[in-house]
Image (cartoon, rainbow, N blue to C red; front, side, top):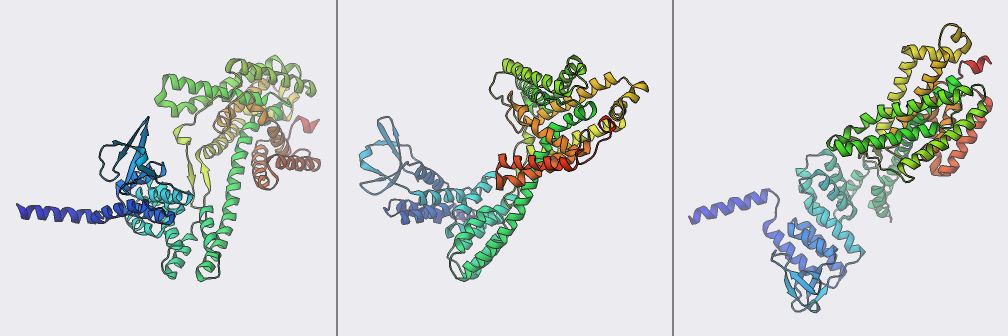
Length: 539
């Protein structure tokens, strides 16, 4: 029986050793670490924190959390470290290593262990090290980032074990960055530090740049290598920054495209300056809010599908309002652009006030489905949000559908005929009044669809449309009135130029520069990038 127990214990210890759990060493590390925390020297306390983080013991996480929260005390009588908590007039203490229940004591018999900013950083890094072996990949990634931000040589053994076990490529990449940071700032051999700096050079992100900036001080071999790597990272960051600006510009351009394409149809085919176009966009956004509220109330489990219902609903709502606007007001003002502008501006004010009366003046919350939440982050720190990517793809799909309608349907043929020669189209039997109504309805419906997209990235309020109406007109005029591809090129061009100007001139001044450039461009090409063919040309 004794031989069996001895064999069982040996196998158990072997298994624990293979699992990377230092059985006796962990207990000693926790005990020694607690003793170090009782020291008055902050340097000794930092060493004790690192020792606890490197222990891999779950009890160390409890101790470090208590220290960070200000709940760790030293008993004056014997310098024992305890976890203390005030509950009303009572003061309860517990042994952080035994897991026993708390007992009441006199707070005057204990002294709180104080921490400074240096210790707080070390504690967060140690807590990160303790969660490197979590079952959750996100927790392991966060732990690797925490170790990277507070690198100490004691973390290397834990990182080695974590890297050997890691199967997720994204998490492993972050652990490699943390390992290189620890090795680069550690007190190891020069060759090891140089190799670690070379590894850090493959991570072109601002955090690595900051770390290497601290190592590049001085004239030693390590400082020179850090300086060379730092210059390479700076060049890479400039390149990735340009890529990020292009993405942001395309994202802004896709928003402008959605807001402007409906205006391009009504303005190009009918020659109507519709100042209420922004309010049609706003109606689409509020339709999204109403649809989502219905899903929350009746189908909460299917909330991710709400946008697929909101898109056709917004198209119908804004489209019907547009047809009513054309039949009730605009058709009596054809050929009188100034009166049309004033009338639609008045209608925009009416629609804003109507929405304020129904929904209130405050912003309304519109949620994003789970498949549009989150972002893709590259190793260089470039963040591509899923909702922006979805809007870019969606805007291109909308352009594709409109192109098919204009080229492959009888309505599109009639619209093109009326655009090129209204009188001849009427003489050939095309009902130009009906085409005008359907055209205005199509443009208005697309504005509503734009509102669905904008609700995912902007505040849904009665003033939503006012933010995009001027930019929409600039896109239409710059690209060519009534030209679909001109609107596409104009929207993306203005979006990218805006994003490249903003870091240097600011958002407002950048828009002013763009407006001046468009004015100068129109002086040379009054018809825009793509000259339209239609009534304006023939006139």
